[in-house]
Amino acid sequence: MLREVLILIVSVAGFCAAIAAYLALFHGEASTKEVVSTAAAAVIGLYAGRVLERRLANG
Image (cartoon, rainbow, N blue to C red):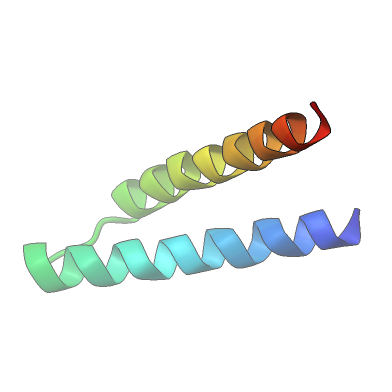
């Protein structure tokens, strides 16, 4: 359980940082709403992939 929480925290922080850097670099501004909503979508995709991977591995 602790491992899953740490993965969640690190992935949210990483996605937020990467998205904010991209938006600031290529678009000149990074609103909090865009960064958080895009990071949330990325984390949902990450966890969907983890669930799918586990189900395929277990058969």
